Length: 376
Image (cartoon, rainbow, N blue to C red; front, top):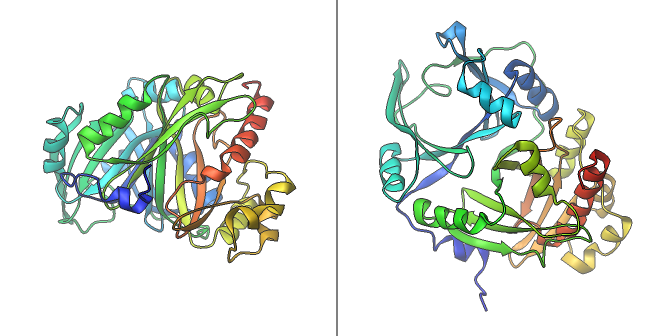
């Protein structure tokens, strides 16, 4: 029996690709200006940088927002002939680039491509008066990309080609700190090959596995494996649908995204109760809370916690534990009309797992939303 903790498993990852964390996440969207307003208003992101016609970029407009260590880039095409237009037409608004902060972008490219990675961007160096940034990129599942970003010789706001984005509209942040993990959905029979790709190409290790016996409801099921680099700064759970009586949330995503892609972005906070209250006051919609019995049994299930249960129940926040502590988490509804991308708010109190004890309550809540859409 495998008795290693999550933290111990992380140390088994290979070290040929040192990663310092998530550099940024870039979404391709239909209207970046409006999307930026939404993420500022609803999620408390702050204006950081901009690139577009005013900065000499003729084909796209990109807005960079920041909160804590999270950088979100929203890019929209300025012409129907731009390939990004095809991406948005097919997938709707969604994550295109999961950019990773590395010490050596050229070495990262060399190590991953010689292990079989498909090239997205050949290594290049971009410069301005603030220094240089070296970048390269490879494809992962679907049309999603890992961009390697090396910025040790750069002192600018974001990247060369961007200028400071000054705005008179600056809502207060909501306490989001960093990207905890990003979850990808892949097609039928594709999870194991995707896991092997992360092991062979990226040197990641599989730290947790959940099968359809653990993740199921009366109607649907899915399978999931969590991949992590050695220091645990970057974690990518990968989901695959499993046979069930009705359509699973993964199948719904694949249908409406029209392919594999990033299902949700999990962002960390030090005070989930305050963060969620603030987000709800700004109009962010969350999945329905589980039934009262979930909270009545919480102490028996996870042991003593620091938080009062009443506000957790009021807000619908879920709690789970592992050998190293416990965590609190909650999930938004999809942030667009297509039932694809959503966000998770998570607070870790020692736990390094992903809320396996909450799966049933969570997925039953998701299924209620699917039923409303006629997609269950």
